[in-house]
Image (cartoon, rainbow, N blue to C red; front, side):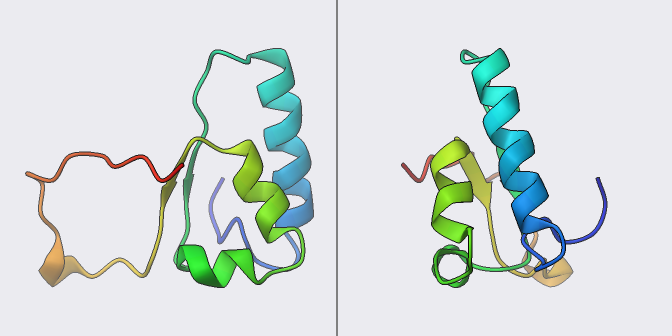
Length: 77
């Protein structure tokens, strides 16, 4: 998609897209990558609604020097 999915101009459309996808494909997982943290997203208009539609959140600013390819995915729900 490009850009920040939780930006003010994106979050409502991303939320609706996520809901529609989950309704059409309930057995598929939805992953969301955001430069914002979970706590920041929860405070946004539509933030909690968006989080309720996804299965995995990769959050926070990407920092090249902290990249660790040995980490496994973590479920936040």
